[in-house]
Image 1 (tube, one colour):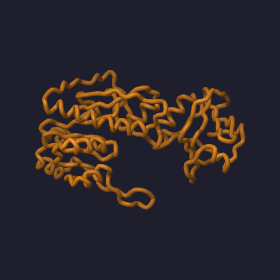
Image 2: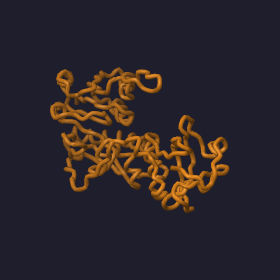
Image 3: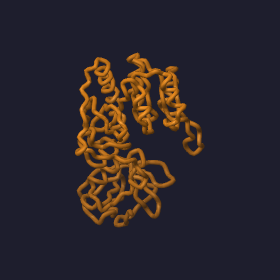
Image 4: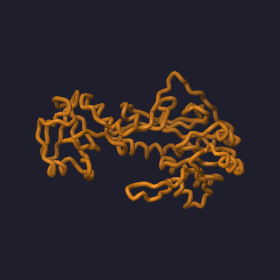
Length: 307
């Protein structure tokens, strides 16, 4: 089977590695162009390109899959199946229908719930206890294609968007190989998604991280977990942005945003219901640090407010 692989983000790395180890016939790796990154604007490759290069796989980079030239290149590969994982671009009908068996996608949610670009963060932010991976056959909608396989995954209390993403990427690779086997043997039983149950997980914005201390401690704690590492939950201290990296739910009460304790290793902030003990944080222009170290260099007064 001749397979083309669409991917750019590191979430797709375990699946690409699994396909390589399974000796699948990868005739083309399609990924985003190299881009300047960081303060020095150093040109960086996508994680998928780096992996493909290390295995001498054929690489195709494009910023616009609608270009006629791009379609010509894919057609010349004569693909039987496409696999898309965290590619970063929406494919049009011509590209979707180009491989003989279409294109399948690994999506990190239990579809039709959390369609969209940020299903893992939003599942944590919304306080879900469970999520999962879905393998679907792509159509022209947003994550609306027929389901090939699904697998449930527990969201543990200590999970952040980063840790859960790593776990789901690894487990998704195994699910992908199972789906691929079913498709090869023509044993896949595709299931149409129930549109009534569909929910959406839109792209994250920096503004999503602003903490409203009037919300309950559980809700804010989930926001902290769901937005780590990006864009991160934040508040303001004396006019400077203060990122909250780790927190713990407590029962003490006070006026929302009030610093209830700021001594030794405890920084306790009142919420609309309950409070949060801040474990690690990062003041604008500074490095991330434990609350105990932060308090030694930035003594805070109880009763003062975070905004």
